[in-house]
Image 1 (cartoon, rainbow over the protein chains, first blue to last red):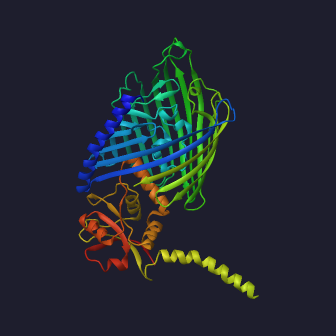
Image 2: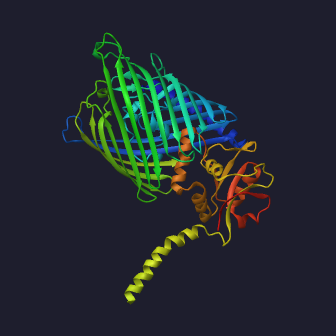
Image 3: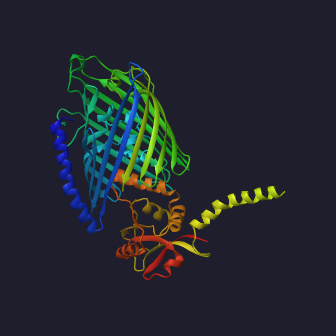
Length: 365
Length: 154
């Protein structure tokens, strides 16, 4: 984001804190639900230069704090997630909710679109995801992500009991979609004017948990986005239609935890005076975590795509036709963890290169 | 032979250690029990294990006209370990992880945890829908409490 919107975003954060903190205090006095949790992480990455493969190493470091605020008063709810980093700060989520029943909530605001499997589970809480990185197709827009993750609009969440202790969860949303800039998507941020010229995203997710208290689940996601470009690639204004259909499976067995996701992605450039894009391919990932001991977890993830070349995805440096990674996470006490991750990544239309990442993550509950 | 006997004793001791550790983690006196309690005038008639499990994972559990407020009894490690084993069936770290996910996904707070029994009892007695877990032998020494579920009995 540019300077003024970032400044407005920070002012909004301060204003929201000004509202949220007294709300937390009031909620505390009235025994209502209230939560303030802070996730922090520091990460260092070294990677081979790509795509030239000159053999030189590039390095980068980042520091991130994620402030999560939740307030529930009678049937009204407020959920805010503000990320403060060394190169960015913004409200990742800012939602005002109303509980339409004991198990259903209608939200208005900025939310993570429900068709993103990984992000609906972990959001920005780095400490609770075992790996240092998230799969490229779940990357945030401002971190090189190629698919819409943040929307502004309406989100409806509900759940209902199934047979023999099982549970169904359903989420559906409609809101404004990010805009395409050169080599990145610009997500819609509150109070910044980024909504001008934005398209829309409709998405849904249905999930079945065989045990309501368990972590196993099976689900389907679907979304349709209109992504407008506010620059002129190939000499013409473009609008991209993205349709996505996916399935996912999560499993937890004693020391093993697994997540597998597959998406069918369909990109269409519908502008008549631009070079037409029509791509359809499968992309997915599978991650397996193994608890070697209570504190040490080993993990691996494979990300793959049925295509090696893509006119749309090759615009995004972080998009990978294939990535293989392995890592170890060592938890220190209840609230700190150190992680080391190595990976090999092949970008669309590019050459394979390697990365090493080290991370400290923590939470202040 | 002596060396073989020594190895046998050593192997026996190594095998016995985890069992001893488990027993230490459930160090309720013989014949005791791990129970869930509410205040004596609570409208909660009875609870099943699934309701208790759900409540401690931060899910809404409506019973007899109100929502359960689960309180974590962190006053002694063996008691908390017995709770993890018999109620949520997971390790401490995994339990904490689930609670963090709850906060991330829904902005909901984790159940309150108490290292002081006085503070725990004050909160328990202030809400008719509050519950916590204790050894039965301890419950018998405390006034105004009622057992709503026996979780585990020797």
